[in-house]
Each structure stands twice: as structure tokens, then as C-alpha cells.
Length: 214
Image 1 (cartoon, helix red, strand yellow):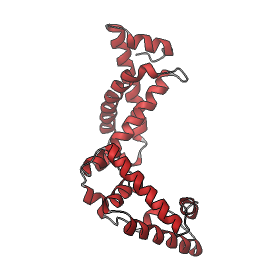
Image 2 (cartoon, helix red, strand yellow; image 1 turned 90 degrees about the vertical axis):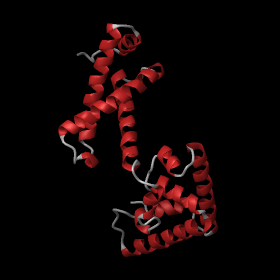
Image 3 (cartoon, rainbow, N blue to C red; image 1 turned 180 degrees about the vertical axis):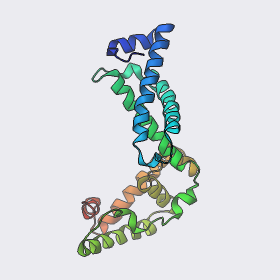
Image 4 (cartoon, one colour; image 1 turned 120 degrees about the vertical axis):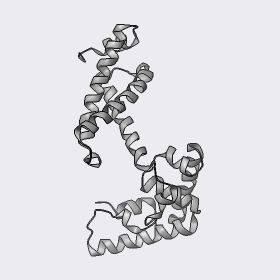
């Protein structure tokens, strides 16, 4: 196996026919599997998996990523090594799949049921002083009041699931019996309304972020 090709050689070989292309694709898959293995092995949320399971996951992600890379190879501009560019695509693809796997078996009710709008999510992991905590609690109370009384239930669910939990937009759209474009608009309108109502109360989004800044 050789991944020491130049950028031009990678593109030429992957665009070729027959054994030349097969060899390049085999080398690309091996490179991606190795890179993904090290990436996945370092993720704390996968520490329950043994090395063989991580290798299998890396191989699966590498196969999926290789197809994307073959489709996008015409977009490669040569600003980095081809393998570096390919690895970034593979890691991005793997991260997306891991996120989807996290929410795949959950319903929208389950996603939003656990303390749906409890204040703790904004200050999680922080240890503010009593004075700072009092200010944060006041800000949180205002945000929660606006969300609960000024936004529809559907807007609340979408905002919380997408912006707080980080549910992928395509999976959230499926859970809400919608589509990504419609969901983007729903979230956009909800954020716009939330911002407007907060400003009416003398609290800008910048103020909210500043309150919880380390």
C-alpha cells in the first residue's frame, strides 16, 4: 500500500480505469480506516467499545466516506494534501453519523421530556459565584418565560431539540413530521420572536451570552 502519492497522482489514479483506480481506492480506504480508527478511539462517548468494534465502525464509516470523496474529488483545490482533505470529509461524515445514532431511537416526546426547559442547561459545568448565580437565574427565568408564553409548543420543541440538545436537523424534521426547509423556517421565526420579546424586556441576546461567559 502507498499513500505517498502527490495530489495530482491521487486525482489521476482515482479518475483512471481498471487496476489503477482499484489500487488507489484501496489505498484511500486503508488511509481513511486508519485515520477514523484513531479519531473514534479518542472519543469518550465510545469508550464502551473494544478495539475490534471501533475498527469495524471505522471501516464502515470509511466506506461511506469514500463514496462522498469520489463524488466531491472535483472540488479538491489542492490547498492541502489530498489525504488531509479526504480525512476531514471522513471525520465530518463520522461525526454526523454518531450524532444521528444518538437520537435515532428516541421520539420527539422523549427528546423534550427530560427537564425540557429547566435552567440547568445554560450553566452546566460552571461554578459561578453567588452573585453571578443570582444574575444567571434572573436571565434564565426571563428566557424561560418568553419561550413558554410567547412561542408555540412546536417552536419550543424545535428550539430546544435543535439548539440545546443538538439533534440533527434531518432527524428532528422526521420526528416532527416535517422537512428540513420547513424546520429551518420554524426555528428562524422562533428565534426572531424570542429575540424581539427579550429586547422588549431590556435583554438582548448579547446580554444573555455575556451572563454565561466564562
